[in-house]
Image (tube, rainbow over all chains, first blue to last red; front, top):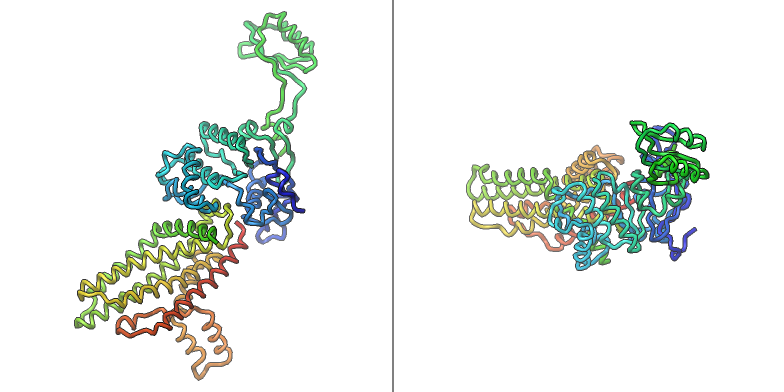
Length: 314
Length: 260
């Protein structure tokens, strides 16, 4: 089966499997097991999974570093076994290693030449990309003099220099400080708005929850869930009502309990939150008003992506 | 075709700069330059004999040093890229594995060429310091030193795709030694009275498989001012090109099958 190139699918895999032989044993380690996924063009796809789940092996197969034992994969309709599939791909490895004696500009220009750009195009795109990742002021600085976060930005510039339609990032946030993570998040959003597809593997779930359109959860080489982050998490049938009271109120606790709710107190015994079944929230709000407690917020309770991840992979 | 040249050029440029910064390259160069410089002090002969001794010793030092530099840099080139993971962002670009192997090889040869130029200049300086003139015969020797190094670099590159760097280094040096004494080995295995069918076959196989490195040694011609026929020079250069192309093809096939 070869997918149609005009279907708007950036990545498609069908039964993608990778076995590694175990030395001096007849058995094989299954790194990826019949992985079938679809990444729509123009979206951010979060590829989640614990360490050893098979995320990097999948990326290696997509980039042609290793051949699948079974199954196939396509990038914009071109088989990943074909070198041309990578013509539209920019790749940022987990820990970007470059020759550290090269300057930032030399690294990006080298990758421009490797992406097939002419010398003039390479010079132009190199400056544009270094500006985009806010490293143009360090263009002439050798990588050995740059911090890890800065080298990560150079890796992004090197991946972007060929103006790829698809960006594959392997754990891009690892080792970045909060400012670096925010920068990366903003950049990913900007690239998506430019129409690029982003396939990002990570185990930093809060990062993924805020930027991804779709996530796939991989556990022991098997895709155990896929969908939007809101589809993946389970919505609980309870509501959290945040309140501000001035003193401990035993009667409030009793009345909330009558409605099937549960009152949470601070260290001084003052009520701060009521957890109540969704269908009884209005009754509890009346009780709170009667007891002169100030209403702060009412939020439906839902599982975080982290909770969902733990549930799915365990 | 232009795209392929651009790929190979980009990899070769970085590889050449990388090679020129390697400590082992600096050490070998320093050692060779020192040997060339002390050549002037070794002789205790008359002026003419002394010049011949200097030429003989210097050309031998350049030949051996360049060969060792080519082997050492080529066996570590690709493996180091994989170990340090610098190859991954490169191979994620739309280029074929053979382009990577070829680029690495030409980069290594670029570094070797830098070394040959430095050693050649030192050689000429030693000659100039002792005799007051420079022998233009040196200009004939140096390109062929580089051609021999090209063969050795290709052997190193090919072996590094199937063996660890230390093993590839020892095998390359072994082939270097055998290739430099190829006719002697062939004569010994096939020419003696005790030579049997097995040793004759073995001799013939070794003769055809090993590179003929003796044909790049123009030491005698340089020392004794012997003319070398132009067709022979062309033939020797073509032999190197074909040998290198064959070895790089094997290296590319082996690297293409490698799981990264």
